[in-house]
Picture (tube, protein in one colour):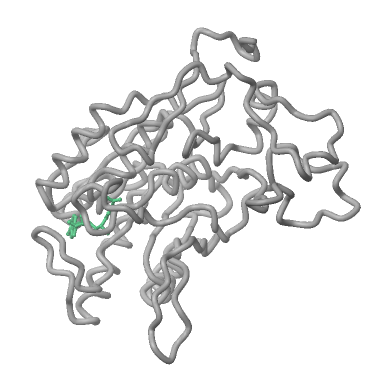
Length: 328
Ligand SMILES: C[S@@+](CC[C@H](N)C(=O)[O-])C[C@H]1O[C@@H](n2cnc3c(N)ncnc32)[C@H](O)[C@@H]1O
């Protein structure tokens, strides 16, 4: 496709209308939430009907251009997702409503909002590509014991961690300005990495019609996938392009693509565990996983470096190592 690995400056509806049916593997959208956010050049306060009519149009374009094996992912606050689901139910197959952590602020006589949602629809559930993922066991900060009591099942604990559910409490909004681009609502890169590992294979293409400062593109490149980005604002496009130039695209352990955050692998595919396991020192007595966190063998990662935004610290692994060979 002519747009592969490019960020197009322009209106997402116009650009998507020029893309052929069934041509990208995954579409992911993080649109403006109509919450009066201060974007450069986009007015984020439309009349509700106008906003929803506009959303329906780009959602339908996303579905049209997604391949039959592909997925449509849409991020927003629950209020808007309820409308999005009604649009999507007519043209795609529901898979999941994923909730992930959001900052809470008291809203008066109401429940404090504590999650954002991601709607996960398959273009065709019978053909849809979707991989099971694992994340590290959650532990008590002081005692280091597992937060969950596995009772009599401790001897069969997975050494790395459980299968991921549809509630993601281990990924948070970027809270500090020093880790953020000049953009009011940049998403954390490892959120996109998790979605990409779940729904795509190496060299698949992910399209994001609201690219902002490039989170989806950087995550795709980091995981050996292609991307297509669309963004109205030229300043955001420039930031995204400069981040992409610095991205080397090697978030791998052995032959397996993994998502890394703060020097830990935080998402891997269940099917890749056989490749990844030899890189970890794992206690022989499986029950002791209850209080011992498995660690990467000392030199599995050969060096690590801090990328420009130091929150997205990346471990780099030595690609000269043969499959399953581990430097001692
Ligand atoms: C919520 S932000 C996306 C942030 C992005 N996920 C990131 O992590 O940087 C929405 C973006 O959509 C852009 N935008 C608004 N209307 C647009 C349109 N019609 N076509 C393309 N981009 C648009 C805004 O400029 C803004 O950067």
